[in-house]
Structures are given as structure tokens and as C-alpha cells.
Length: 391
View 1 (cartoon, rainbow, N blue to C red):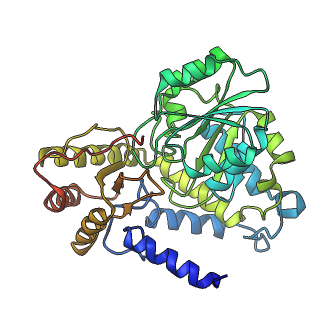
View 2 (tube, rainbow, N blue to C red):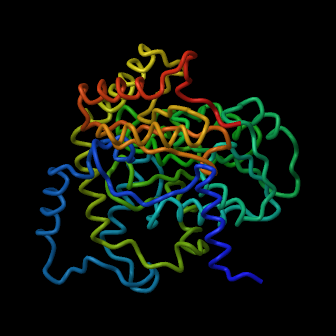
């Protein structure tokens, strides 16, 4: 048998030939690729607020928690932040996790069992897909955002166990929104449990709190669980599950990715609290980022692009072919715009794209300059669609 390293080297060479080679590249140029939608990650106000919080701590108060939550890792700051996050999302309780991936994996594997059925959107994030695999349940994947397909499946009896409807709210690759009001109604009508990954919407949507699309659609009290992250619009890191108290208590008792991992550091909990303070005090940020994203779409359409308007900060430009997508991204990077490409297997074959994300700390001039550079690099005789749903 050939040495493993030789086989791995050959596989990497095949990926490069297909235009699928990846590399770790440091940030350079104007950020149009990260998930820092509110522009908080590098904001001096967030840094100052965090430092103020740290200066107010008792000298002996630890900034780390080198144990699981059940083995001395739980501190008062965890409990205070979880109470605040529950109020923020409009639920009874919340539970912190180190990452959104870990939260989705643990939530689904804890609540869903082999006898159950999961009805899942075809464009759901990998963490949701992997969580359902770990649960070992029967999986029914419906076409992206197809409410009629959801109803047809929910109407089919499943006497072996429970049925769960699993969806993102704002989809991270297509920049489109699930009809959460419809889904909540269907789940109630057919006795299904609704689980929503609100990661990319948290901090952006909702008139009162800006807590996400769960708030915008008014379904927080109807969902079994809502997963949110703090490493996107809130600009720091970590994640949490929000929902009924009994769901959160069940996770504390049975969720292996929560039980068998080191607690979220109190330092991070303080940073999340500071980010929430700033996001709540400055609601203009969420209004501005959505307006700037719409401005970019308008500029691209005026340049000859065509496609659905969308409603969020994510503007996908579908190019299809891997090598062409790489070439366009590299040209934009050469001009000083940090735009990254997304290729299979992150998206389906033939749907390679630029995933542009707009931030509240961008200027209108920067938006217009990006649109001009993108049009020059991409425009072809036939219009290009901004976004197409994954098959």
C-alpha cells in the first residue's frame, strides 16, 4: 500500500487542478468578506467598553474557566449573560457554547433520536447537517425555501417518533430568508418541533431589540430552540441556544458537546456583554448595513447584473465555474477589496460564487467602488444573477 502522505499529496494536486485548492490567507484590503456585519470587531468603542468592564472586576476574579461548567467552570458572569441573552431573544432561557457549530451539533444530537424525523432545508449549514447525522434520525431534505414541500412532508404521518423542522433563518451562502412565520404555523398545525439557526440574522433584524429574524417574525415563543452566534454581527466569538427553560435544562443534563468541554471563558462573556451594550445603544448600525447592502445590489443591477434583491448583508455573485471565480476574486483583491470565493463542497457543484458581505463601517464610496470593480471583472453579454438557490 502506498504511504498515506503520497496519497494525500496526490489528492491535493487533484483539488488544485479542479480549482478547489484552499489556502489560509491573512486579511488584506477593505473587508467585504467577514461576518462582522455591524462593524464591531475593530471598533474602539467595543474595546473601551470591554476594558471598562475588566477594570471593574475584583482583583482575584478569573478571566478563564479551565473546567467544564459542571466542574467549577460555571461563574456568575455565565449566568448573568445567559439571562440577558434569553431576554434578548425573547425566550425563557439560554445556554452558552464555544461556537455555533458546537451548539448546533449538540442541540440536534440531544433532542433528536433515531426514531424521529427531521425535515431539513437543502441549503442548511454543515453544522445542522452534521448534527442530524449524529442524531441518527430519518432525514427528509426539502428544496430550498419550498414551503409547499415542507407542508407535504409534515402532513405525512410519522408514528415512530417526533418530527422536527430544521432551518436557517438568513442563509449564509444565498443571502435569502426562510419564511419563519409559515414554518411556525405549519409546525403547530402538524405537531412538529421548529428549530431555527438564527446565526447570520442575530444583531441585524427586529425593530425593538435587533435580536434576529426570530424577533422579526415573532416566532421566538413557538420555536423549540433558536441558535445564535456572537462571532458575526456582535463581532466577538461564541454562541448560545435560546428556548424554553426545559429545553435548556435538558441540554445541561444530556448535551455531550456542552458537558464534556471547557466552559466559555469569562473574558469572552464580558466581551459579549460589551458588544450587546454597543449594539443596543447604536441601532443605526443594523439599519445602515442593510441600506448599504441594498445600495450595492442597486449598483450591480445598474451595471447589468440581474437577480433577486434579497434583504440582508450577504450579496452572493454567482459565477459557476471554479477557475473563473478564483480569477475574479484575485482581481478584486489586487484592487484592494478583500472579497473571497466560495466553491464546492461548501456550495453545490457549478455554483461557485463570490460571497460579498457588507458592514456598517463601510462608506457609500467604498460600496460604489466595489460595484464598479466587480462589474468590470465579471460583466458578460448576458446578465449574471446575484444569487440563485442551491438545487
